Image 1 (cartoon, rainbow, N blue to C red):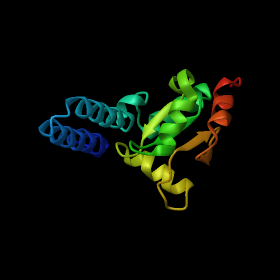
Image 2 (image 1 turned 180 degrees about the vertical axis):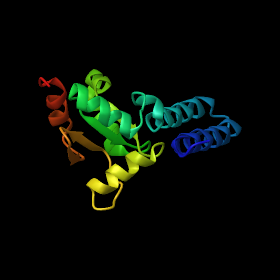
Image 3 (image 1 turned 90 degrees about the vertical axis):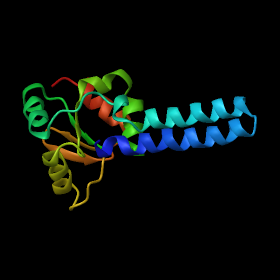
Amino acid sequence: MTRAWILPLLFVIGGSAAATGLIFKERPGAAAALLLVFVLLAGANSPLLFPRSIGALEAQRRSAVDGRPVVFWRPGCTYCLRLRIRLGRSARRLHWVNIWRDPDGAAAVRAANDGNETVPTVVVAGRPHTNPDPAWVREQVSSPA
């Protein structure tokens, strides 16, 4: 199992344990609601919400060809989730690199952020931008290459 699934798995296990306790207290409605909340938290922190990740080298190659930004992210990052949700459908037009799965991606983020793996780091035209405003990123996607 990869690191990306640890947090979602913990949410599901924790929610299941809490729901089981409520079931033993004969509160099945509360148990179902609590389990639903934990499953939604697991989904929000899983890699499933993000477009398919590619390697950093491939993302940089594709970005050089089509001019689209590269987003370096990791599962469980609140700011990455905020960026993904605020981008909506236009998020699929970006090149996403999961730094937990790609050592080259993690190295690129460290190089751009003084040795820190601060995400999201968005690279536009070869220039890194750490935790940029989602509206600005959306403008970069919609502007002509």
